[in-house]
Image 1 (cartoon, rainbow, N blue to C red):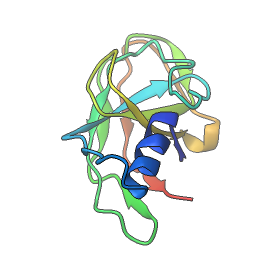
Image 2 (image 1 turned 120 degrees about the horizontal axis):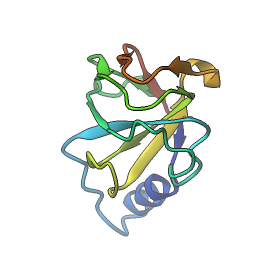
Image 3 (image 1 turned 180 degrees about the horizontal axis):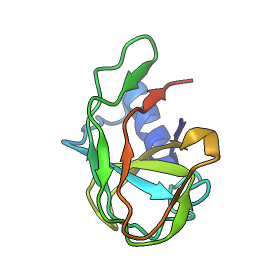
Length: 126
């Protein structure tokens, strides 16, 4: 997992008591076809729908997905290799929080009209 530029600045401001970070009410996963970069805007998947994700409370430096995140009837044939986590449903706007790989970056090949599930995802702090 990599924190985005946005999240890094919010964390630093909170630690330095320069600003209070308001946690998002919900968070949403977005798919990517390559590393989304520090701002999570590179290589967005053709399937632009962000799906809501829920996580257990963080413990021992990580937090795990609590329920399967599903995309039904994906719009595009492509290989998704990365994900990003956002504070709004989108498909545009909002703030990116962190990014990571799918299957270690090798990804999953999808065909238009496939259903795709992420059944396990653990976000770990460095």
